[in-house]
Image (cartoon, rainbow, N blue to C red; front, side, top):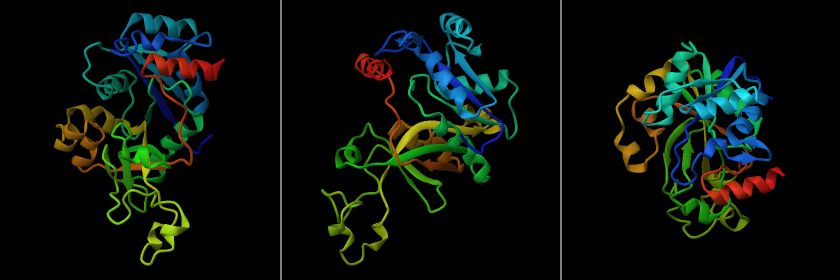
Length: 266
């Protein structure tokens, strides 16, 4: 799957969900969703895949299906806090690599997990890794629910935003990253093979950084954008970005999402 060696996958799972109650236990083709996520993550080449749960019912479902799981506090304000506790409970430290796979991504590609883990070996200057894929419609570029990321030539993140970034000052209203009509114009050769990127919500961390992250003060940009990863950039940490050519499978946030995924898994 990947050249990455020695990484652990942590899957935070909490029972509370305003849009889909008891989401981790939602049945998908005969398996609780969190179990399906864990089984896919285990195919990534990880040394260990562990569910970090806040409810005994999640732990029981994992035990029933042979999935490694640990109990974490129920009062964590964010998934990062839950991961930091899990990291400490498992004794992960130093440069041990941890990959955060969301518990509502039952169709996640195991190869993507391995690729994000491998980023921290190829980018020793980075504290975190994540992923993105090219955006192919103006509607997605403009959609604030689609998080965008801009990187430098080394593949390190400049910024994440809900706004359309980079802003197309001279090419607004058209797909400036595609089409010979745009690329044939004088002065736009730099646009060749360049596309805006949609952020994919998967992260790798060095264990020491993950354990410290919840103690970092919130960044103003993080509060404004409601994007926790901006805290790392604000405090001077680098985030490496793996660009995959295709979008990941759909996640599950709503009953409609669940129906869509169930149809794909039958």
